[in-house]
Length: 336
Ligand SMILES: NC(=O)c1ccc[n+]([C@@H]2O[C@H](COP(=O)([O-])OP(=O)(O)OC[C@H]3O[C@@H](n4cnc5c(N)ncnc54)[C@H](OP(=O)(O)O)[C@@H]3O)[C@@H](O)[C@H]2O)c1
Image (cartoon, rainbow, N blue to C red; front, top):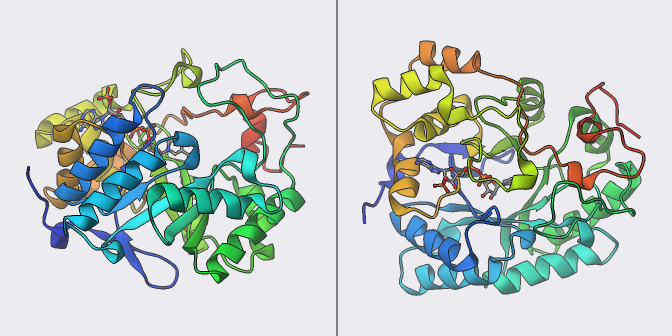
């Protein structure tokens, strides 16, 4: 297996100066790939040079990924401090006392004594069962509440104080929500995990995060071509088929998927592409170490933005909500 030289992998800096890799590996199987395949990809990926692995309790594979993490360390491929492992607290574990329970379960499953970064996966306790269809709604769902969010965040802060996690982060946030909670944080978020790909660049939120010393981590960096049915609509754009991307990719002799990743890294977010296929996950890491895009190519891709959100989150809507747009505070204030 090809091993990518660590020295060639670009790095990004967290607010306190700590460096992390500029690209990581995603681990959500999109209801299509099972824990065994994903754990194998994590093992192979670390062997090939991945050091950042994006996990979550709700992906229901942390126990198998833990076996791979154990194996790479037993085999001396890496040591714990070489890795940057993230996990996330799921929506049904936000209440007082539950965040610690969730974190401890992830630690046990991943076979780790600490996590590098722990995200609040979604900023409300609205729960939907894994694998549910797009029309499913939970009658207990409710709009974002600053108070409820801060109950969750305070528990995350305590995990840092207790040494169980090094950094904490938020995910699926909006500028109005960040404006409301950032002044209340005792420990600031180190990263913001958000949907980012050429057809959905979120320039305002991206700039806001950067300006506040929060590193944007980009999910669905390739446009999630294997995402679940519940996350598909007829209007969705396929990034890897955008003519301007196909053309630039051909010029560089790479798959458009790799072009998405080169663009993401050069723009300054940390993409976390998913693949269980060895040639894909190796080329995803390798492509960011060579043959950079020109400023003109970066500009063409900037202009390819279609404001096309793929993960609309409609399964988290509360009774009375108008539509998925309500989750994203489109009119500039927190939707109630
Ligand atoms: N915080 C959140 O709420 C949130 C939400 C969504 C995702 N995430 C995280 O972000 C990660 C990435 O998102 P994602 O998995 O939805 O989407 P993605 O990384 O944009 O797309 C993954 C798919 O792209 C294809 N692909 C990957 N590398 C390729 C290559 N070199 N050439 C051609 N095709 C390639 C594969 O399709 P095939 O399977 O067809 O080969 C793969 O399944 C997730 O795994 C998860 O860790 C977080």
